[in-house]
Every structure is written in C-alpha cells, then in structure tokens.
Length: 549
Image (cartoon, rainbow, N blue to C red; front, side):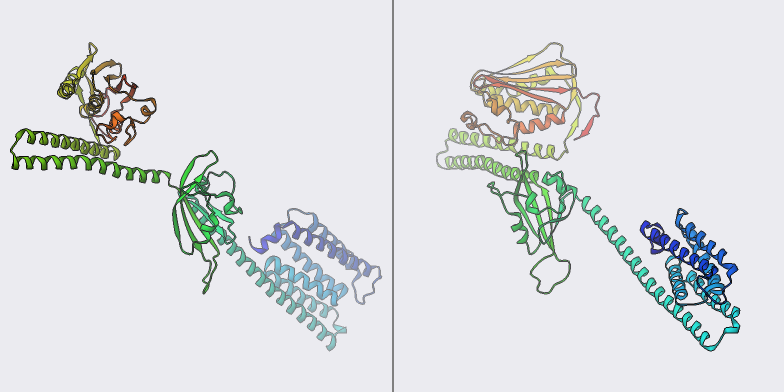
C-alpha cells in the first residue's frame, strides 16, 4: 500500500486530520464573526461576507469530521473548498498576516501529502490569486513596502511548501522502497520455506547461539516432535546417543564443524523407548565474507532416519559373511577330495577310494549348486522380476512325482516317503515351477532333519485352490524358532540342526515364492515329535497368464 492510500485507511491519522480540520474551521469561523461584530477591527473588511464565510467554515469542518467513509474523493473536495474559502477570507476579510501565511502553508503541504504535486500546485495558485485579488481590491493603499511584504510572504510560503513537498517525496519514496523490499523479502522467505518444507530430509537452521530459526515438517517427523521448534535451544530437543547408548552433546558436534560434515553413527531414542539410526549433516553458514573470521553466523542441520539403510548394510554384511563361509567349506572339501582321488589314482589305483572321494566331492558340488540356485532365485524375487507362468496342474500327479523324485534320498537315510491324497482332487492353475520349488524345500528339509520314521506329502481340496502339506517325524522346531524360521539366514541353535549344512536361505526363498503365488504358508511343530509345513496355493485360472511381481 502506498503512503497516500495509507492516510485514508489509518484510523489514527484520519481522526487527527478531521480533528485539526474541525478546529481550524471553528477558529476561522470565530474570526469572521469577531470581525463582523468589530471585536477585532480590520480596516477594509467586508462585513457582509463574514456570516456566509463563518457558516461555510463550520459546515465544512463538521462535514469533514462526521461524513464516513473518509475517501480520497471527499478529501479532494474538502481541500478545494478550503482554498476557495481561504481566498475569500484573505481578499475580503483579513488580508495577509503571518497567521494567513501559516494557514496556506499547512494547506499546501496537506494537499501535497494527500494528492501529490499537481493538486498542491492548485493551492499555490490559490495563494497567488489571493494576493492579486487583495491588491486589486486595495489598490489605493498599495505601496512598494506592502508589495514587497506580500511578495516576500508568497515566496516564503511557496519555497517552504516546495521544500516540505520535496522532503515528503523523499520520505514517500523511501517508504515505498522499504515496502517493496519487505514484500520481496517476505516472498523470498516464503519461497525458501516452501522449498525446505518440500524436502524429504529434515532441515534445521540454527543461529550462533544454537537456537532454532527455521525448520521443516520432516525434521519434526524424524525427531518425533509435535510442537514448534522456533526459538528453542538445539540441545533441548535433540539428544542423540552413540552406539553404546551414551548421551552425546549435540552442540559440541555442531560447533566442531568448520566445514560441511556428515555423521552416520548417532542414534535417537524416542519417548516410547524405540531407537533409530540418525544421519546428521552439519554445514556452517557465513552470511558475509569475513577475512580471517573465526566464528560463524549459524549452522544448517540435515537429519534423516537411516534405520532401514543401516539394517540393509548389516544384512548385506551378514549375507557376505554367511555366503563366504558356506562357500568356503564345500569348496575346501571338494578340492580336498578331488586332490585325494588324484593322489590315489597315481599311487595305488584303488578305485574304491577314488569313487568315495569323488562321491564326497560330488555331494559338495550339489550343495553348491543348490546354494547358487537359492541365491539366484532370491535375487530375482527381491528385485521383483520373477514371472508367474500359469499352467494347469494335476495335484495327484504332482505329489506322486515329488515323492518319487526324493524316494531314493529318503531310502538312503532309512526313511519311508508316503503320500496322502484326498479323493476327487481337481486340477488347478498356478506356476508349476514355483509350486514345485516350494514343496521341494519342505521335502528336502524334512528328509534332512529326520533320522527315522516317515516323510509324508499330502494334498487336500479347497474351494479356492489346493492345500498341500509335508509332515515328518524328525527333530521338530521349538516355539521361539518357529517365529524366525522364515527369516533370512536364520538357523536354529539346536546342535542337531548344526550337524547339517545350510545357509538359512531355503525357507526365506520359499516364503518369497509363496507370496508371488499368492499362497499362504503355515507350520506346526513340536520338539522331538516332528513338523508339518502346509501351503495353500490358490487357483490362478482367473488371473493373467503372465504377471510380474
């Protein structure tokens, strides 16, 4: 809003102007009445004009004081009427005195303040016309001294008015520039705030006293705070801890940052006791270049919850460690048996020992092939690039083929492998490859962890598909372990489990494949009494033949 318009809406300014106008009008009306009754004797005063002028001043002052709203258009008419009444008062009643010059000066300045130079020039013209009119009316009394006084007074009024007008113009331009600067600064601040609030990472700007001056919503989310941070001390709400759970002074970390630094080793503990891993980036801020400056004007902090990233890093490290260990053992055994077979062949030629060594090496190569297959399947499942090729599956034939496939392996351990098939099983549609791989994992685990007894593969109808199960009479799984068996790399601490090779990936891959098949997996087990793994595979006949997950 410019300065002129502001004068019309500011209640205090409008009230003051109205009060001054009423006061001046009343005084001028009283002056003309006093001249009429000769209480103030002014030679040459036209008494017949006194009452009309008095009434005119009173009406003008009262109208200005009470007629709302106080608009620019009304004020323009007020000043024009003041000019006309003032001219009449000077020419026909009071002439020109120091009070008259002061009155005209106030009126011209007010016209400039309200309406600018063009309207103020009307006031200056009114002064000059008043002088001319008064001289014309009192020409018989005119002399050089009087003319000089009038011209001097006119010049003084005009010069003073022009000077005040110039000062006002300068003040008005300064105010306008200040307003534009303030508007621009506010816009830039809002733009910066919008930009910061759009960031996914938490941002906190603090001053040199470690008090918050700016922050975004993401920072509140990371720090688990609902209230405002503005003006609060950093150490009041941000209390990180180290890996050992010991508190860390955040202000020391921030003040020590002479250059942009990153810290990924801190943690934050929430009010409910949960803990997150915290990413903290600190950048010192210098608002202006200072040669050899040793202090900063503040800091910008960027915070982010990297708990998942840390978990993935730990999982990756664990993956590398487990896979390296699992690969090293069979490779070493394979290399040793092959070397032994070569040695026996060269020295004794005993084919029984050679066959035994090669069989042991082959067993380890098969284990390695299974491991590589699991890793490949896992990689594709976690990247979401496995395709489900839907085809019709006969559950009777499917189970019989699976039992026959592992009959020799079960027989080698002295186990019986049986099938339990409900009557009237109808074909269903799903991925035969992934269904086979899931049940294959159940069967191989059942054979691996069963020392005596039977392994049973069964199928039952379901309105929405087929429910398969694999039961054994093996070592069983404890209750705590049942909650973890589908986790990546999990292997029970039971010594009987540790006697067999394994990576802890088989059941994890199984649950991944089950989700791709939209299947449901469950397990029932009791230590030393065996386990039953069940999977319900829905009929995907209504689904697209090929889908990507």
